[in-house]
Amino acid sequence: DIQMTQSPSTLSASVGDRVTITCRASQSVGTSLAWYQQNPGKAPKLLIYKASTLETGVPPRFSGSGSGTEFTLTISSLQPDDFATYHCQQHFGRRTFGQGTKVEI
Amino acid sequence: EVQLVESGGGLVKPGGSLRLSCAASGFSFTNAWMSWVRQAAGKGLEWLGRIKSKSADGAIDYAAALQGRFSISRDDSTNTLFLQMDSLQTEDTAVYYCTTVGLAGSGRDLDYWGQGTLVTVSS
Image (cartoon, rainbow over all chains, first blue to last red; front, side, top):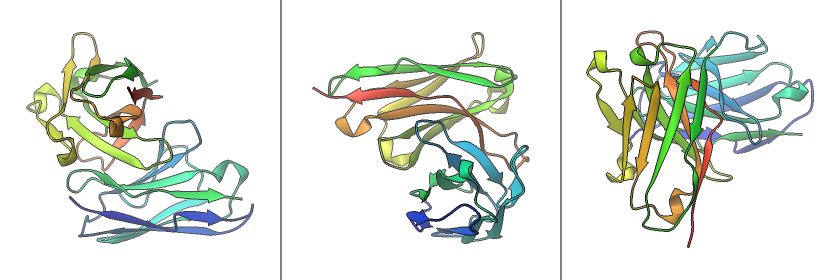
């Protein structure tokens, strides 16, 4: 299976900060990469698909980039609702997730 | 509006079995591909498997780590997805989510999620 490695595991930030989360794949997944946001006690929500396409309704402060084995999720100006856990996931092969990145104050 | 409602979770002893259901509405379930994902407390997400629509051959793909203990099925007449779990172990304790899989070619994957159902395996 394709291994997905996210970094960092935890990120401390403040409202207004620019935040970047990295996801690396053990082999190329093209752009078959999605990002999900998960709030405590809630189901994950699709944020970005095809590595860089924003899901409908997702604020434009979120952006995704990358292809092949290296991907990033960037939040240009962190808002209070953005303190959550973010997961990357590939669907090039059997689906696998990164271990998650918790964005905290 | 897409709605996915999981049920069937609860407390089960090691070695036992449980069958989860996911009631779907708000979209064409018959044409949808569906998936199950789980999350142990404080851990990351783990994909369990995917079932295609019958029109797309109905093929089922599982995560290798399940070792044949879990099986996914669907009943298109009642818009329900199932996850049969056998030989449950304490490590299977998790919240189980059903998800839709985006249309082929759209690039979307696990695009809608249910609220999850908790399975606890303990003696």
